[in-house]
Length: 178
Image (cartoon, rainbow, N blue to C red; front, side):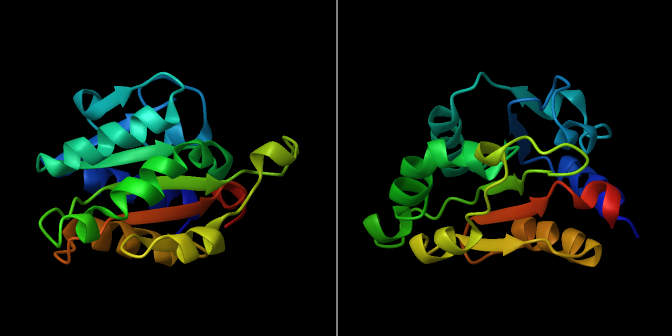
């Protein structure tokens, strides 16, 4: 099994669930390597958004509160940093602020930017997995180190019944290397 193929298989599985909607930049339009993993997801489930990361994460939280399972895609960690207020201050804290009354389930997909064959410079290759694990009390953060980790992680994120959101981190370099 290949890393890229497993990413595609996981996205197809998510796409079959009637509650999911994929949202972000380069989701319905070409633009990143992640775009290619969505090729077999129904077009009506792809919501292309402008570059407004905090708005995107706020929309995802609202959709989750309404019963949907949004898949919020941020192609690189460095972009997700622009939504920290919504992730850490809102989505992660809603269960505590509502005394368990609100437990939205969002699947957040991000990546550690690819450095090979071309290094995109340091503002695109950050890995903030450990920092987010420290900041988030209710969001589970999973880093996908091996191809066999991919499908089970997304399946768990979709089917979990514990009221937790999941932030899943992939490696851009592994698309062609593993």
